[in-house]
Length: 448
Image (cartoon, rainbow, N blue to C red):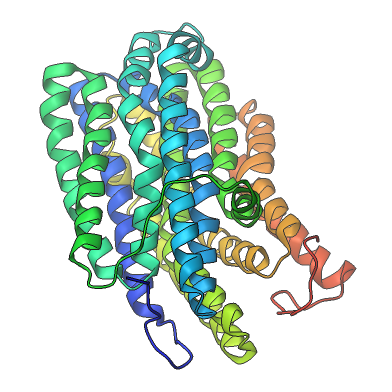
């Protein structure tokens, strides 16, 4: 049975259902990550806690490749729905599922063949090396199934199943936490990592159940289509590059932290990176609405609704960024206590870092919605530059420079780099290009 448009009339994408479900889902994901690290902090020593953070650049690289499939794939499906091209929906969906299965298999093979080299690369032969090797070895299931989970979840979230997607998140995270405790006690740090892969398997089963229960189903025929792969990659790259950018930033900050300040440095770096990334993940609730609304209205060719979408996302970004800033500054001690860091001096340094990060949530939120707007209005170079500079290259550069001066310099460098990147983009667009910052143009080439 062919996929049907939700309405015959021009479809209005409601802000609250997608925003609420996506924000709660991402908050729960953050809670899951924090709980994993809290479990590790309670069951093992500070070296184990730092080891989990060390392998995150690998995890983020895999996620980046997954996003290259998922973001553009779902966006094209939404546009096809706006154009009422139902056969095209089936074709794109089938291509994306095939691509996710291929990517998962490749990542599984890489973790299996190169686990020793990967562990040595990030641990530098420190006392964290055994923990890193164990984490990489048991991460193979996660590598295998995560791309498919991300695509199926994103499809359900943005195609009318937002609250079902939220329910899946709750069950997936609950199972992850339970399995992390049980397997962590019996298998060591690798059990906590393995639990994440098992939880993704549970999530996939629940999403497949959603499709089976729907009266309107998609016809899936596995097959890889190179033309679709190219188009989807171009659309996906700007937003997907945030994962790769964070991987770069994490790798640099972790190395500066552990080389200059030892285990204390890597523990503080882990806290800084986590609270910084939480803002990025939580703000995805706004960008998920922006993705769904922009692509639906672009498919319809409705300029008035595109403008309404822009106004909604700007207001939401400012409000959400301010709320996060207040929470970080006021609850810095409570945030750090989640990680169960053992050394008192390290705890104090981490609390200071959290209060410093409280400066930039609005910058992060606005960077995200601006980049997403450029991404889906065909200015992919502009979007890519903004994300890579703001969340990757410049925070890594200034964190490296300032981190050599003091431990607090790591955090200050991240803040300065993120802020300068957004400022450069604003000046480029408004002064050099003489455009409004978020101006919709129907005829725009795939450039700056």
